[in-house]
Length: 143
Image (cartoon, rainbow, N blue to C red; front, top):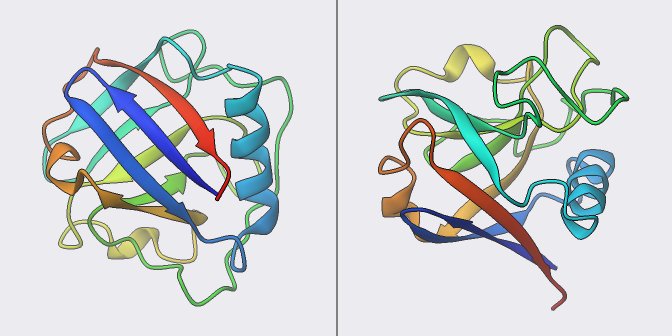
């Protein structure tokens, strides 16, 4: 299983880290299949750092109405370019908001603090082209 994130800039294909972050992947897949992400915006883009989306209010303050635990012990818990990671307001407070990493240079402090749950494998060039306010949708593709 993988995901296609369609943005205003094009389509990014994401492979999940299902072994390292099974509950986080399951949560993202569930929300995507329910259509939760369709039409949401990347509400926060910091060049050289991340593009963040998944807030239903478009402000960075909302979520799905529940929280999930962080999964930080797997081997793929390193924030490299193209990695999808859960945003949160403190340990074990994630829900629907996620970010896509722009660069390793400014993100090593996030390692083992935010759950990495996938990586862009096609469309990596789009990661840094996504602009604040761009909309997106997520489609889950069964392999």
